[in-house]
Image (cartoon, rainbow, N blue to C red; front, side):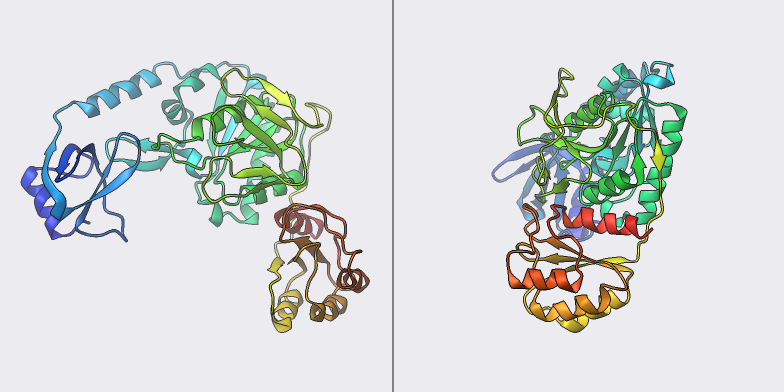
Length: 408
């Protein structure tokens, strides 16, 4: 809730949250929607959402004039929504159907323009309202859950895998999984290990929300649907290839990683080429590397995972006692080592002590490049101590999930 000064101003002008207003300061004029104050925001700063999707804050003391714009914006929005609802029916043949599974994240959200609030798009109808071009596609949506991806757990991976199993057995053409970007690479790796798929399974997300002019959600989603209609029968991630809006890359599920906090092209294939370039406008697909084709493999699923696995980021001065305690209390551990895969020499005895009882796996902080413990003495001693992973080129996430799967 806003502070007394802002609240008094709004009351005096007969304004409320969600109203479309024109606001004048000493320097500028703005048009936008009055937004709720975020919990950590300044109580005396009014937040409005501009037409470009960005929110700005206007300090109370700088506001010269504020008034409600008497355009029938709400009626216009409602009319647009009704038009988009006009033809919701898609083709009846389930064998041509693309099933869109929702797990939350930025891409699975729709904007309520009357208030500026963001809600998950749960139904096929709501998704078509957000993306009217989907009327031309034979899609069906199913909301599994709506979570920020940092809150997704291995139990959710299993839930997703079982939902995919159900949809494949119904005979769909392909599956698109809308997912938050932060932990998408973990889910992609988990599904890659748990499922042998005869059809495309494509994870997709968005770095920018749909109320921003620079949003990547539409291009990413349409590219993912194009990939799901193709003959690329793999678990893959489809995201922007660069900062332009030309095409998306389709990344293999065990070889992809989010490499930037906010750029639209944050996802990269690690130590491998992307599978393909996916063009959303003309539905063209340019193949870049070998892949499993539609129908080549019979469907198989194994959802047994051991979640009592830990990752330890190795750093200068890391305490031996901490590492030993973590290894002791888990069924397996992935060490994220330096350079070629090294750990401090004083940890080698710890590896040797436990390697006969449980797997201790190595990966590298450098992300790119292949592990090689044969080069230096520390690495050779790690091999003798029983560490697993020499010469692997996996990401820490893929190694972590693969160990969970191997121990399941």
